[in-house]
Amino acid sequence: MLENSTKDLVFIVSGGRTGTTFFGDYLSDVVEDCYSEHEPDLLVGFQAKTRKRIKRFGIYHMVIGRLLRQTGIRNLAQKYLSGELSDSQIIDKIYKHRRRYHGSIEASLIVESYYVWYGLLGPLRKSYPDAKILAIIRDPRDWVRSWMNYGGFYGKSDQIKWFGQSRVTPAVIGDTIQAQKWAEMTHFEKICWNWNLTYGLISNFVESDDHGRVFRFEDIFLTGADENSLEKLMDFTTRFEHRQYSYDLEKLKTKPSANSSKKTLPSWLDWTPEQARQMDRLCGDLMRANNYGLETEWLNKLNQ
Image (cartoon, rainbow, N blue to C red; front, side):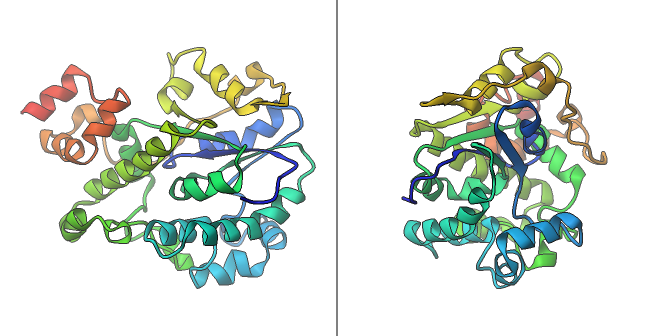
């Protein structure tokens, strides 16, 4: 366990394409005494933001260590999932690059949205026993479509390759069955596999964690969503044993939140039965556990 932090911490995790940028960008504006940031140590090209982050975290952590695959949450998660690094080693690395970051922020509540924490939830909890861990899950039919329309992600144009990084694969985590099939799997199937891995890890963690909670993307962002869901999420995010941070819910509702991308893969209603069955083979159990894929139209596709 790390030395006690004087800050209240919230880590927002997901599989990406779930509105986490929205929370990172806007919670500082609507919650008292709060600093929120999306992916605080991610390289974002030759931008002013990158220069600021290099100054904050150091050139080794931001650039050199990434190229050597020794730093960066993505690299650490893959090393942890593969068994290359132990809990204690990961905790030490988390401490080294987050201590100065947290110490540089004046606000009492720090909210970090960074989807790749999903691969380090155990060490993250041991590092910060009192932190809130908020996960956002999205219907895999829309999530896979969003990633495919966004571009990259196991594709040739995946930008993380520019910095010597890679995506997690079955071989990394010892999934020998899918590793044997990986080379022949379609781009669509690979992203389905990733959804199941990501949210399987998140679900298993949250089930036994007192300070973890999963919220559905559809209940927060989509038109016609449960009106109380956003309030429940914000109450979870801002309520600690010693303090309840006040927030302006109405102001939060007015902020833009949609992920936009080009449209190449259509809605699942227009998928082929084979696409539906491919997803069901890779994601079906976890989908149904989260009340996805129960529509008559979807079941008909699976049975065709």
